[in-house]
Image (tube, rainbow, N blue to C red; front, side, top):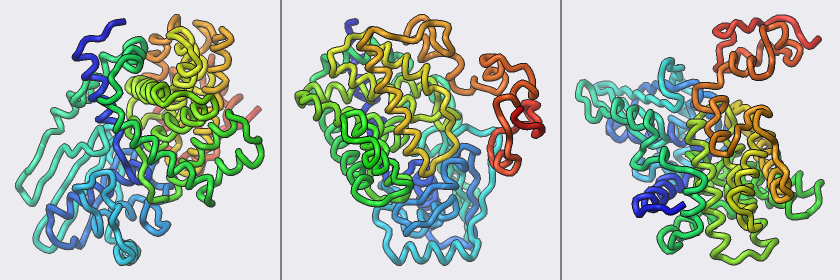
Length: 461
């Protein structure tokens, strides 16, 4: 497949747009960014902060440690810390410069209940609104669709920015200064194989350096549930084990508040780590040339972005799976696999772990990363042995492009009814053969069971 000059520019622009540094989990950082911008508009200390968020933002922030916060967690902490010590000019590194005094002031203000948090309904999956009030002024900032997309700003009665409609149109069309609808597996492989690396090497080099650093931090020290350290301590030290451990360890540190920055992929630091570390481990083990390694990382990043484009931001399916598809594809690429081999690796991975649910950002994300990378490595070895799950088996379609675009995993299309139909369920009685519900915990889930007529009754038969 021969790419035009515009196609090359599009892929390069996508990579430069996506592969940016971020400190900590991107959802709480997006809140700190919005809060820092709101405080900048207010130009004085607020007496009241209101945070209105989509359910997916709440899910991804409530259980994760805010970086550079001294171990504090939650939406209120993210907003207050951004207000107290954030620098909005640094965007996703907004709280890199907070001080001990800022952290203590955050604790004090949080104890005064200065911040209210509310669920916003009928909004995009990624939606944050911060309202700050002082004695005389009120400011408002809204972020939607992407972590740094400020779509609305106002002070008192004056609207300073309002592009919500335009950004919604771009998001609906899959265009954010670039065109992801023009991506294809064949196209991105042609790009990775032929692009002049001088045009993009700085971005990939930064990703290697930052993501390797936080991965090593997770292996060296006791962060989170220590999934990476546990894997190395119990599974041995072969290349597959080290690939899973290196990816998981970065998430161990990141989900537990480590302030080291990460180069993200598809708006996620965990996905950025997952597309990077397994590829680096295999490249080192196989003594792959630097040029081949860089081109493999282009494959890894672009495959992940391509799949995530159809899944959508902050969706119910775990993004570690699409990222692991990327790293698995890159490993197949380094092994000499062609389009068919790489396609089989992606298909085999999605057929295996495509249904992992995103239940929020927290320490167990590292375990999901390890499971997804392990599945991708199995998919790679199957593919190189000319083995593949066949069309009609679950979400697998006739070719990899169709599987990636399968309506089962497409954004906003994986409702309960589709899952039930796909698995042969007919009502809540048949579902109960597979599931038992803990009512207290299920009520914390942002998905309404009542909406889909799933009653909290019965149990495992």
